[in-house]
Image 1 (cartoon, rainbow, N blue to C red):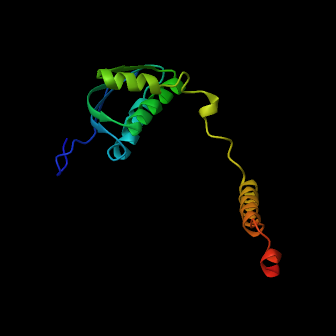
Image 2 (image 1 turned 90 degrees about the vertical axis):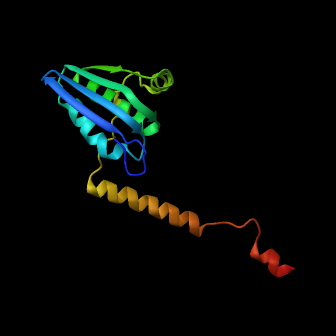
Image 3 (image 1 turned 30 degrees about the vertical axis):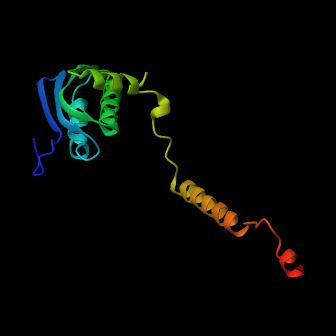
Length: 153
């Protein structure tokens, strides 16, 4: 798919031949300009599978930056959390190296989960304390010289 400037955009094709498998075909540019519209569709397709197979074909990807690697990590995480088997296919050699280097050993690791959400009172208290600490740092700003030294001269 091309836009009016001739730039290749990301393409996403999903197929669910059975309830225990989904096939996701990615193509074009996977970058921060093209992925925001497709991210939701790809992850929703991956979430349809519970303990089945997720097949991701990247043979038509022409460019991939950190946003694309983030999408790969998000798909890995969904697969790990649902107990699905994830298979990537069609990587170009340079993209394969990049994807291998960026993969997490355990995408469902507890360290990667968001922290426990604070209550309204705790969140307000923390924000107030941070603001007061910042104000204190501004008020107690110390010059490397004393004003008395300037008056004496």
